[in-house]
Structures are given as structure tokens and as C-alpha cells.
Image (cartoon, rainbow, N blue to C red; front, side, top):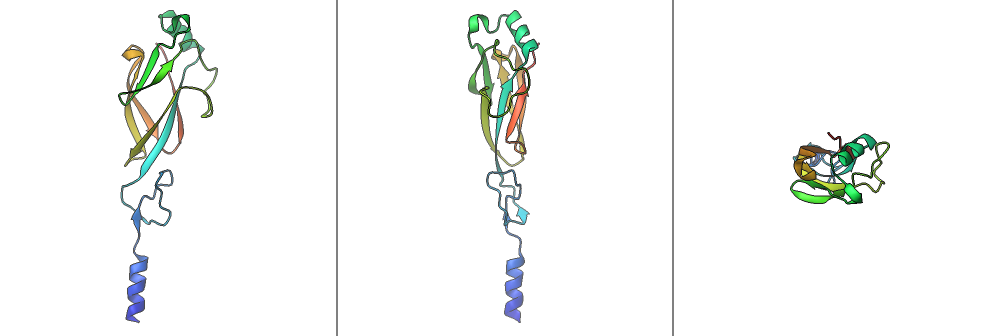
Amino acid sequence: MLLFISIMAITSCGKKGCTNKYATNYCWKCKDDDGTCNYKSTMIFWFNKTTSDNLIADGFGYNGYYDIDVIVDYQYVGALNAGNYDTSEPNCNSNNLSVTKEFSGASTKSFSLVIGGGSILNGTIQFSATNTCNSYQIIYP
């Protein structure tokens, strides 16, 4: 009888691990979250015709050059052409400029964001692991 109680006590103890179903290391067997969750999320960048017109009027994207640099977390992601705009929010399968970030701990994380050398935007961007594809609409001015 004592052996049975000992086995029950050992097996009923909650296994610790990542209990967030959005994490890349989700542990469905775990009962207690130990704060070790890892996340991966993608952000796509886009802007509409109004922003495109405003960027071109201010000299961005002249002659079709890709001259609007995007930097996330101090790393160059790519460049946007001011003349290439979307009529509505694109989906994740679009050819828009995107960046994927991996992070741990909380299911959301902010990273630094610089667009156009800071003349268009200099701030932060929030990635959320609850949605593996997030979009960021650039609005200028």
C-alpha cells in the first residue's frame, strides 16, 4: 500500500516546461510553466497608395530605386520601393518585405524599428507569438 501511494505521489507531480501552445517548444505533457517558452513570429511591412504618394512627393523612391531601408533590432532587413504599395493589408503569402524574429520568455516582444534612416520612422515594433504572421502598416507622414 505504501508503494502504491509513493508511485501515485511521484506520477501526480506536475511536469515543468513550456505550457503556452503558441511556443515553438510547447510541452503538452507539462502542467507547470517554468518560463522557458520560445517563440517565433513574422512581421510583414506594407503601405497604401496615400503613403506611397507622400513618400514619392518627399523624394523617397525616385526613379524606382529601393531606397527605404528597414532595420529591425539593429539588423538590416531589406529595402522598400515607395512606388510599390498595397491596396489592402497583405497576407503572409505575399511578396512583401518581412522579418522573422525568435524570442523567449513573454509571448510578445518589442524590437527597435528604423525606416528610411529614421526620417520615416524611428521607434519600436511589437511581435506577438499568438499570431505567427503580423503586419505593420507604414504611414507617412
